[in-house]
Length: 442
Image (cartoon, rainbow, N blue to C red):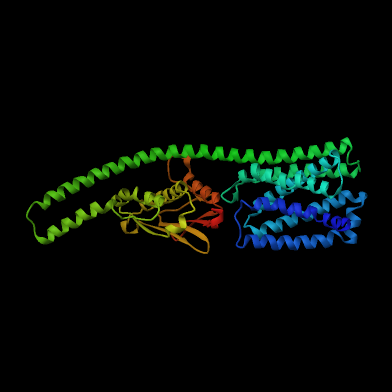
C-alpha cells in the first residue's frame, strides 16, 4: 500500500497544477464540451505524468539532492507548458491571458506547496491520515480561498482584463523571484524543520500572497479609472444630450406648427386628392414615434427613437435589421452606449454628404455560430486619417478625441469580443463581435 501511495505521490505536482489552472478557467469563457475537455486532458496528463515520474531517469533527477536546481527548473518549464496547453484546449484565451493565468496558477500552486512544507515541518504526525489531512488543508481549502477572494474578482464577464503588459511582466517577475529563491535554499539541503527552511517557505507564501493581492487591487484600480472615464464622458454626453433636446424641441415645435396648418386646411373645402394628400401628411407626422423603430429590445429602441426627429429633419434613413433575441446577454446600459455612439458617428458622417439619397445608415444585428455581430455601415465624404487603429475625430473638442469608438472597443473587450473598423470605397464599417456565452455562464 505504501509503495502504491509513493508512486501516486509522483503525480501530486501535476494534479495541483491542473487544479490551479482549472480555478482560472471556471469564470473564464469556455469552449464547447468544456467539462469533457477537462476530463480528457486531465486523464491524459495524469497518465503521462505517472509513467514519466516513475521512470528510472526521472527518479535519478528528481530524487538526487545534487540535481535539485536542474530538476526544479525542468519541472517549472515543463508544467508551465502543460498548463498553457490545458488552458488553450479548454478556453479561448489570447496569449496575454494565457501567460497571466499560467503564471498565477503556478503562483497559487507554489503557495499551497510552501504552506504544506511549513505544516509538515511544524505540525508533528505520521501515517496516511496525517498526510491526507495536510493535503486537504493545503490544496482544496487554499484553492477555494484564492478562488473566492481573488480569482472571481479579477475576472469579469469571462475575460481577464489586462490594460498592458506591465501586469503580466510583474506577475512573472515576482513568481520567478519566489520560485528560484526556493530552489536556491533547497540546493543547500537544509533539514525540513530547520529555521532557514521554514523562513524560506514563509517568504514564498508572502510573495505569492502579495502577488495575488496586487492582482485584485490592480483590477479595482482599473475599475475605478474606468468609472472616472465614464463619468467624464457621461458629463460630456450630457451637454450633447442637452443640445439634442434643444434641437428636438425646435423640431417638435416646427412639426406641431405643420400639423396645425394641415388640420386647418382640412376644414377648407378641397378636392378628394388634396384631402387624401393632407391625411397622408398628418399620418406621417403622427407615426413618427409610433412604431417606426419598434424592436423587442429596450436599448435598441431608445437609441433609434431618440435620433428619429434629427434623422427626419436631415433626411437620414436608418435601415435596421436586428435579431433582438441574441442581445439578451448584453446589459442594457452597455448596449445603449454601444449603439448610441456607433449611430451618432454614422449619422454625423452621412449628414456631411451633399446628396440626401446617400444619407443611409445600415444597422445589422445577427447571430452567427454562437457569435453576436453588430455592424453599422455608412457612406462618408472626404478622407479619413487613422491613428492607433481608430479614425481621427472631426470634432473641435480634443479631450474626447475618438472616445466614442474607444468606449465601444472597451465594451466589446468587457464581453470577450472585439471591435473592428474599416473604410473602403467611401464606406465606413464598424463591426462589433461578441461571443455568446453558454447559458450556465451568463
